[in-house]
Amino acid sequence: MQDTEYTNEWVNWIEEAVDKEYFKFYEYQQFNNIQHIGTGGFGKVYRANWKKSEKQFALKSFFSLDNVTVKEIVCELKIQREVDFHDNIIRCYGITKLETGIIGRSYL
Image (cartoon, rainbow, N blue to C red; front, side, top):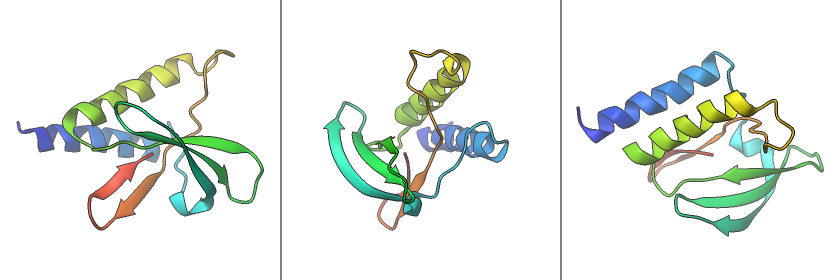
């Protein structure tokens, strides 16, 4: 199996998890006031407001959706579901994706 096939498997897992409502999906266009706040090994982090609310969210973007990155995203999402109840854990509110003509799609 090639890397693209593995990547598709992990992307399919994410999309199925959204379809089964394990994670909420947010339309990227509903975020505004997006500001870059940091960069790490896998991608960038942005602060944004959702719709017209004053509540701020962190959007984590990824430099590439290669096999390793997508697998790490899936592992992080699985762990997040297991520890979501704990007060000291930063909550994952959901997933969004940015459709682009250049690279296809980017999950955030």
